[in-house]
Length: 433
Image (tube, rainbow, N blue to C red):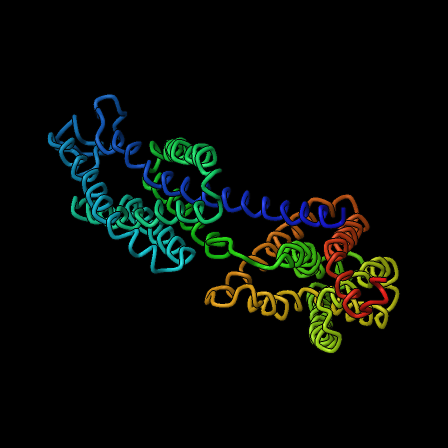
């Protein structure tokens, strides 16, 4: 029964990871298509029927039919020029795709995708900036299209490789079918976003999608895990534990000065200075967690004890932490040590232990991949904590601390099985008997 429950938990963890990777890659390729779409929307603005447009009274013109068009697309051959732009992108994309797969096999997919999306965002924005810089050279826009076409080739081989790495052959057909809707979703969003700006300032029809794809490139760099492998079952539990531990830590990082200012009525500078004590405690807590876990050999148990102790200390800090200056200083140091100690231990020593586990011997990228999985999952909690604090704080600071205490308790529960195994190993036959 215990084994079945453990396997169910682990399988659930991997399902969560697979779902997260599927969502990320869907988002990435949606952004790729989103940034390709503006050119088709803007064409009708670059060359339109000027006789239907209200002409400014102070505008001196010689041609009533083309005065509102964007040079050089104001000529009779504008359709040919649009064709040049389209083919500049498509030919570069076709040629680049032959080489993209080769580079994708030899470079880390996370870096390859991130750089590709960032540069694609840059060139998409540069096309739009031609509006604000009043550039009227066809060769400028054609060059931008060529470079963007080359950058866009980084997307498809890399995202397909990521999904293929995470999903077995038997499941790929249905999953790929659903996942492939990113093409249509990107086209829809690209059309809608470009349409918002096309009539007022068509440059923004490119700049906004460019910023979006560049932002997803940053997201890719921090959160994408390229593949799953044979790894120890501890990774799932430590990762999810870190998610709740970082939720607490980052909530203090972003909200502690405001809490001190509101509750203790300190000025902004005084509250900021006082909040640094939490980080001072974190330094001590990280060192102590490392020493204790080295001495006992119990990484999970060390984290568990500190997290268990942190929950009542957070409760006490909320209720008596502002009674006097001495109590405030002492409670901030203790809370910082207990909250940041497990966080520091998991992101450093635990990640190194798991990344160099004997089951991963021979995998040169195992350590960085394990670290990415653990800290990437933890970063989800880091993002959720301040967000939840902002939503909950209007109802009272007590509720914020209840949320933090609940997160600590959940972090403890996720380590329960590992703690049991460590205690079992210490006690040996006595516990097994």
